[in-house]
Amino acid sequence: MEPHPASDPLTASRLGPSVAARAAARRGLYVHVPFCAVRCSYCDFSSGALSAAAVERYLAAMALETARRAPDARGAVFTSVFFGGGTPSALSARHFTRLAALVRGAFAIADDAEITLEANPESVRAPLLEAWATAGVNRLSMGAQSFDAEELEGLGRIHDAARPGEAFALARAHGFRRLSLDLMFGFPGNDGGRLARTLDRALALDPEHLSAYCYIPEPGTPLGDRVLRRDVALPSTDAQADEYAMLTARLEAAGFAGYETSNFARAGAEARHNLVYWLRRDHMALGPSAHGLWNGVRFGNHYAFERWAASLEADASCDATEIESARSRADEIVMLGLRLGCGLDASDHPATRWADVLRRYGAAFEQGLALGRLEPARDGVRIPRAHRFVADDTIAWLMAAADRPSRGPLGDVVRGRTDLTPARSAP
Ligand code: SF4
Image (cartoon, rainbow, N blue to C red):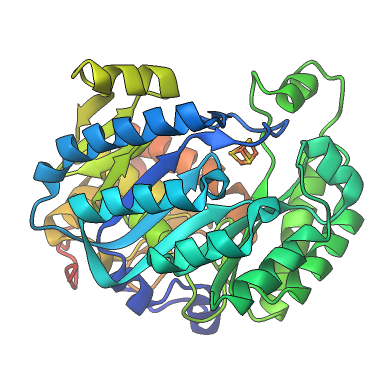
């Protein structure tokens, strides 16, 4: 596409992510830790009960998986590592130190890498903070979800509303400068007033980064099943959209940029590891349910801890793989990149891949622009601010439009285009 001036440059620069943050997100490494003290009522992540025996088995299987995957990553330097779960903070200091040593022994981590650990507030204690810092962890992502006691109980969280503040203070005292909070809204019992009070409490902690997800009922979870059986009601879609608009306005007024549909950061505090995913750059993945993209192959490890560990112990495959195609790559670039505030930008992708995107989506982009579903961005397109809560609808519409043969004047115009070469290529 022709480079477009952003329709609202001020808004674009506020939304981000910045060019520097996008350039720094080159290669990620995800490590899944599949244990939780208690299972939350809404969660369908791969996670099970914590015991010394289970952790020993996990670490032994991780040693097998790192040995298996490390040769593929020889020569690659990772710019981010993310210990996610489950609850990585549920591991003892000794166990986490062994896990981090395994990872560092097998993969090259950049000296200035972002190393994030997901921590639940109740498990943040001085000895763990010391072990995390010693292992190079420099960013903590804390799952608060809500600061309302009744909501926390309904969600099955085991911390109280005061605990995130205590955990933040302890982390700051141990030198952690990059702290993120996870919040949730739009679940049964949640409303605008409660969300506003939760935001007040969250902002008082002065996090550098904040993620806020709209609840989606997952079948097979206690809360999800109650919603799906209509035992409890969700707020209406309009009410959820109003909550999203309110939280976006509050966070922007407090100096955060909404650089992704559900993610907000102070200047320079974008989550580098998540940018690797949204920009569709190579990422290695370890542990049950972990998903990676490496050298043109997507892989997804077995979801259940037992099956993942048993496969590695038997020297069998621990994953399912899929080789990417030009089409699947273009679909993913569009699906992931349009969630970013800055939208799709040609400069984020190698020239050949951007050409694939335009070949498949050029007509759909033109239709989206004509209908106001998209707006011009710096060197691509983005979802207008007012439609960001329903970004997934726009993306689904674009995919359907790309699958339809182009008809009419717009399609003819796009079929006749010759300017499929991006103005810039990825660094
Ligand atoms: S702590 Fe996190 S991973 Fe564990 S059950 Fe709760 S939401 Fe799921």
